Picture: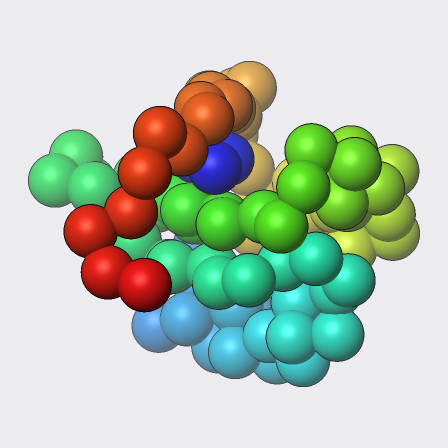
Length: 93
């Protein structure tokens, strides 16, 4: 699991439009099982929760064009907070 938190200079409407326009790129990303788009309680903070099939798939995403254009696309201010975790087990199959 990869958890990304950003501060964006975009309005919420602009951010949603940008995310929607980029969604097909994520749908086509090998090994990406699911991505949740989230809004934090702090104004201007948004994020993504990525569920990857493997660490290799996640690393390939990190090298991809869609990843490298994130800062510009979302007008990210400061450095994104990126966390990685392993799944111990899932509640549902």
